[in-house]
Length: 479
Image: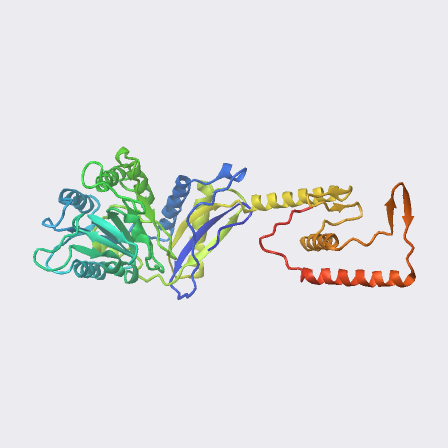
């Protein structure tokens, strides 16, 4: 979907109908920020997040949709202790305990060893994980800790057990794995939301060349920026900040969901992470929603009864052109209830209605500034036409020139002037001798011959100039 350019603003809402659709439009989630008067009333990320959370609360009640996910499965990937140079088992144990004990997520720890080629092991583990937990109401979280690098030539993100090139003790293969190849089931086979968490160097490079997701959310939380390293296990590590941030957000919102954006901001507020902030990446996806964190309640069978298990096959994007810069609490509540009721009355097969974002638009302000500039230029041109003006090219305009000269006219005038200067001067009809002026007495035949000779010289000069072709490197100044 293109950037919103309506008069004031637009609220982007999308639904998930169960009808087949072949053409999707991409919805940008970033806020459009301008300058001048429009920037004074811009909607911040925090305000937009609050409005989205309020919308989701009302929508879930009206459509009887449970908040969060039916199930959340976590795959923790690390190197086995014999190969793991970073010694990450302590941090991995704390993260596993937090996600499994307090969030009630299903967790698995997969350790890459040297019994076979690491890439083959990793591919099999990810494929089995997706195949086991795949579903429309599921969130898959894949976490990796260890060394990482990016091969610019092969366009591959590689996982390493050590910072040095090492080989297996038992097999003749390197202790590194091709993540770009092994992780394809997450982007090609998963029918659910996916969150990838990478605690490795150059983690953001993993976004290069990712396959396009069709209808589900795919987010990547990276410990490091493009071509940047990150800290190893310890007080300054990304995983330590991740564990502390998850714990604090859970304590601050025991019964309310928080989103990935809040988690990333909390991680970056730690002083130990100021020099290497974490980043959220969204691959080229048709469904640019939010990842929510909320402890699971009841048993899996009880949760299954409350969810709609139909697959999302299409996304319907609605754009509301607002005449205000924002919406208040009552407006969001009433609008959400009315839309949910309309969907029920029309018997549209909708799973849920999500708030994407409210985007302030500076299109009207920009258009107004363009119009004002055009009016100013028109007045300036009219004033110039009232008096003779000499340009930097030495060309003049008189009050009779109601319209300024075009570039073509300037070009032709310039060439004509050069042509005139190139012509030889006509022979003088008088010359001075001393203090007296003696007129030349020419007969008619002599005058005729001189005129013919002059005409031939003029024709030859114009012929030598060739066709008038503007040069691309030549600059012309406006009069």
